[in-house]
Image (cartoon, rainbow, N blue to C red; front, side, top):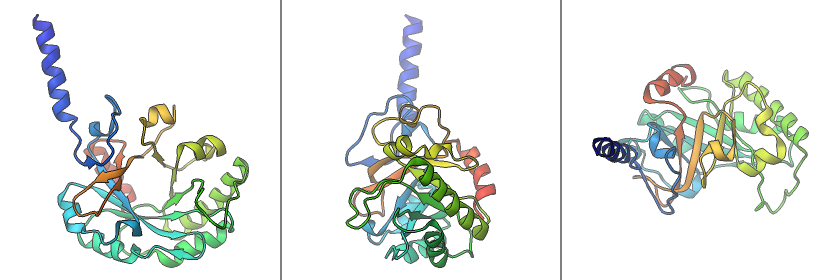
Length: 246
């Protein structure tokens, strides 16, 4: 009886600790190892979120933010400059990402990113977003895995030389399975998994960031937003920032 009571109290305690910090328009039950068990949460935004109120975002407890900066070799996100400046004003650790386009050379895309993302001021490592884009009206090519990895390496090397930080790779389950992008060494990964935990979607793969929803609710952001967690504790996050937020 006593053992059962202790077990029930432990479950109640865990449930209280694991309460989701942010809302979700389409919540998913991830089980015991879901995003609520992680201490450090952040968002990523693009022009679709319109004008974000970064003061409200900071007060909500968001610990970091990534912004779409560029896509391919001719698109710059319309909200990037505003997000970049205002998040810095609120002292939110911020980073920029490039959405890769498989119909342009990686050298050209790297230079496009460099031409629009400032090197001055503290920032998180750049991010290379590699995923298939079934909605593109002009580029439907899907190179084989070896070519995808070659192009990624070229982009990573150019951007690292310029910013002095090795970019993070963001990817999705389908792209990960079909291209072997996870084979690239010496890079941290940011993994999307909105139906299951990364342990189930990417078995055995280490990750630094997990994007667990695209329909999150965060004060200061209009509509649904991508929410992510960092893989470690608050203390480990501070250690990570000391190395990567520069």
